[in-house]
Length: 231
Image 1 (spheres, rainbow, N blue to C red):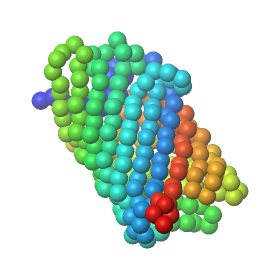
Image 2: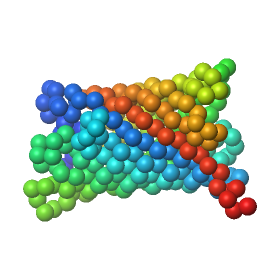
Image 3: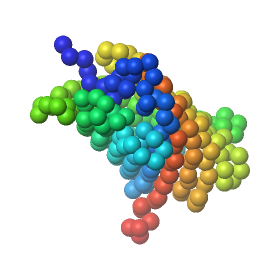
């Protein structure tokens, strides 16, 4: 029986003790939006462009959207969809796998609380992942379905009315073989641009069972209230 292929993106990079992809520092360019459409509902929008190196060598495109239900100011439930296109090779001619395409459905619950000046956010997420692997040496495609659970704890520390620090740790658990998926440890400096937008410049340590990848991150956050336009 064939192993599930979603981990192929990383395991193919880890066949040797040290790989070029692991030695280089990549970058993620990210956009996140929470678009208010009613008192209780908002739309989540997200786009990420990920590279193996800081200025080139495409790795992954991630597009995600979802419908948020705001239970109250500190609790949000989300049902969403994501499309992910991945080039799992550091160099296109290094391995046989040419491309991994993924359609993803996710369910999410966020809880927020404040301790002194620290703002905490707990994010619980379940994912159903439908993957298609294209082999560049074969006309056939390999398909699989995976299920995964994620938990992220995030802490934000305001420094001034404009600047803040943001930290999080997120654990990925596979709900099939190879229980440990990955762990992401993140730290960033952020700045509020306007009342509904901000930017973060950060560093991500992405750990897998046999590899660790370091990534710069540039994130832009924009949370408009679309109800105003209708008025």
